[in-house]
Image 1: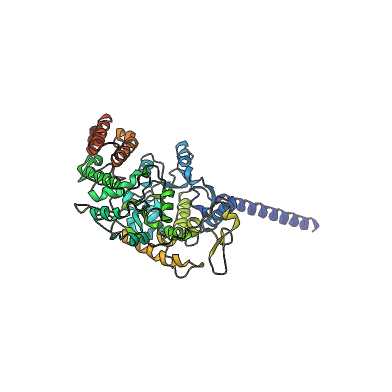
Image 2: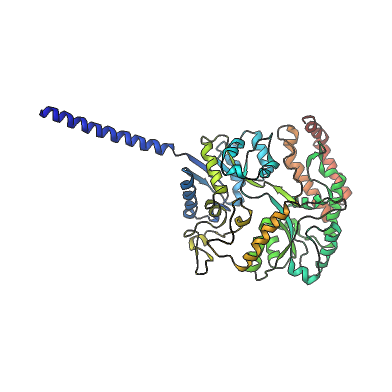
Length: 492
């Protein structure tokens, strides 16, 4: 009897041990099943702070929402593109990452089989499938979608200070003619201010090319590929821009003007106007207020040329999320993407204000006050997400208070974003398929840099219009441009 009891006791002990081992194994299995993902994005997202603890709080929020383990890669904005290129070219592609200049880079990545086809993932996602299909149409490749934007398509308008318009009697509608714009803006000339401040990024001149039915680059026109820089429409557009420069309307130092300097001069009233994203209207409200130079901004959506052409500078999908074709956890990567883009808690934390109690606190008036740690790490919150995210946010029922200027400015920004949909210019950036013409793929960057250089020289008067176009024609022949167009058209 005693032996039987001992045997039963031994068996019970062994059973308990076995149960413990199995349970431990199950726990290890559960831990092992948590997907681990790399997420790459610049530090102008991710809570807008470079502090590791604050960035870690954003990571923890995403992890808690998605059941994943996130290894973030968050370079400074200025070096993000180079860092990403290094990762992609080395084969160490992040599972999920942000792509800038998406219209030109995503087709290349698709051709190189570097990113995942998201068509079915979007269709099967409860949140992503509800997004407006028009968000994807400008960058579909063979009917497939490889990206998800995180805000409405980017477009640019001309921002003019209303206080200076009133002071100098400038009268312009939201869609003036080219002649009206030239003659009215000339009223600012000689008044000690820059009439129209413009950045050194010459591709912004597409705003004016649109007014003349021109496109700066190779594109599809009536079913055939043409070089838009050599058209009569482009000559007309460059002649107009040259006139704006000669009249003193266009910033005489635009060649060296950075975006930040352009905006600062407009914020402070040193310039009457600038060209900027419509989604930056709130920034003008905040920064003119901070400079004690607050004014409403008048937006010009498009300038109508003599033939009736015109449209805003349409950058379409400028920045977007993509998923690596090599990811071992595509479902988890798409879940994280979906959460960042559509979750009403994650989106504001990631793109706008960070987390209460970490990045900021609220004072007695419910105003956002950055924490010391955030303030010391470059944090500068933005409220653009209230108007240009896909999330339906009730701006009259926020946890924090808006300043009087923002209470007035935010509805204006929403109004302008909606108005732009009817005034968008064309975007042909993805017209030319990658891989069809090896010659074109090789010389495309030099075509862009050459046309922008020659356009600049024509506008500032270093060369005449005829000399500049002749210079470009010689360049076009040197790269065998006619043969390139022949190859592109043969592949259609």
